[in-house]
Amino acid sequence: MTNVVVVGGAGRMGQTVARAISETDDLRVSALVDPHVPAELFGGVHALTLNDLSPDDVDVVVDFSTLDVARESILWSLRHQRHAVVGTTGFSPAELAEMEAGIRGNSGVVIAANFAVGAVLLQRFAKLAAPFFTRVELIEYHHDKKIDAPSGTALETARVIREARTEAGVVTPAEPTTHETIPNSRGAEYGDGINIHAVRLPGLVAHQEVLFGREGEGLTIRHDAFDRSSFGAGVVLAVRKVQGKPGLTIGLDPLL
Image (cartoon, rainbow, N blue to C red):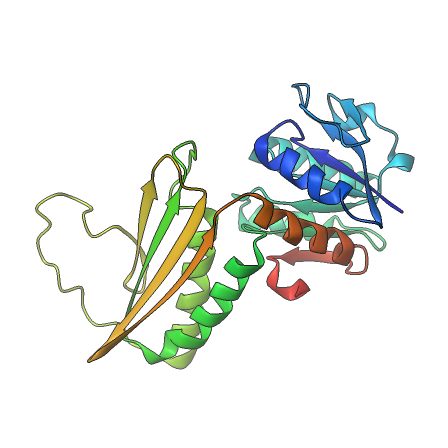
């Protein structure tokens, strides 16, 4: 039985992840770490910090909190040679390199912007389509409580598309809009002509569209996460896989 600690366990995602873990036969929630008392403990205990727990009672740390807390969770995991699955984004390339260098033994760290399997497949399909279309734009939709824009998932999707286009030697035509009546009405430019539009509305969860265009045709790829439970299955997958994948893994795709 794998003992899993959920950091940020009182939050909406933390509770969703803990519930998904508790419903498996091979994983158990040993603790929820959060400054607030979680609504449900799912058979585990409540702790204020990871330092309040014995490393002997932890196999995998799952973190869906803030960037600063996630940094501490990863450091704690590396210090005690435990595995970590992190759904918080925003780490710099230097941080990731330092993190990878600090991994000892068979410890594994998985950092992913999105744990919905459909979102990962969208990126795979977008990578396949990218070399065949002259233009591409992204629209990401999230709930009105999300504090960052664009989302980490949209940025990762844009990166995958840009790399595929560069590798194929695709040259993006010049931007057709030469005058914006309202600044930034064409969205935020990621680079290589890829524009990202962020929508924030109550009632939404997490949704993304990739719109490709070329002369005479278009292709739209869309993923919808209607409920946070869609992320739970991906986290369970990552918790199982990380135990046999030492080192640093970015994204859920290498685990599928």
